Length: 361
Image 1: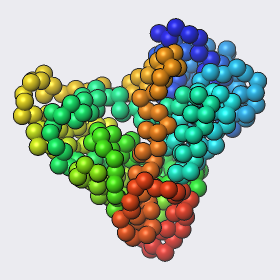
Image 2: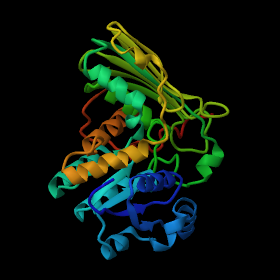
Image 3: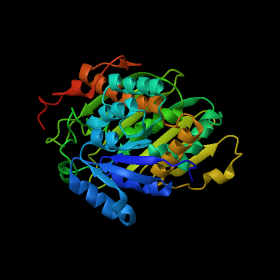
């Protein structure tokens, strides 16, 4: 339980917002206000997920008015992807700590601005990549950092999901370059984040190919495949898609080292399926370890600890930028048809506009 009283507000009351409410209640945080441009979204969320205290929560359709009228310590941003950076920058400029749903930004410039502002204003920023808090993921990362796998040969992540027309019809911003990007930026960025974080090294070069195979009513891709080179010599592959019929199949991550092999499986890399090491010092780790569904709650707990102890959150703005930059590098590689070196000095999702206009499906 947090020792200081945190005044909290939620901006965006769509599909993902319920996980934020669960995290709020799981950490004994009081909600001061919520904001959404559609009033019915606020009522539906509060009546479903915060029913006993719904009457105590203020409602706003303009987040700037909400922030002007209330003394808020922590804001979560769960709006459409394209508005994350603008709202975050406004909050940070007011000295408000922020939790930003993925992706934290749609351009390198906006990601860098959030990092810069958070330092200037001494504000805490956490980016929602909750799968990092899975016990399976934490255990694998620890094994890499401690050297149990030895030199890493390569890794791979498969995000094989389904998103149909009904899903995209639920929100007009989905699948558009200016407001969302495609499968890699929206659905697959979690697995992409896990891959680069677990390998624990700097990405040096990316070659990617993306296509719009089945979702011809979208602007952006529904499939992306990439080869990633790290500075330490490791190689990784990414396969991300929303084309799997008829439902989500898996989010699976493999890691191959000279002294160990790991496979994380399940719907969100939340189950240890293979755990083989030369040292054989942790026999208990060979058993399946599954605890998905609590990532947002743990992320909030980490953020509260960061505020209370004046430290950086586990997934701060710099960490959040890493996944965005990797996706943007894949996009740029698709656009230019060549491998792309990192770090990127600049690139935005909007630069992909029209990429598939000449593709006939």
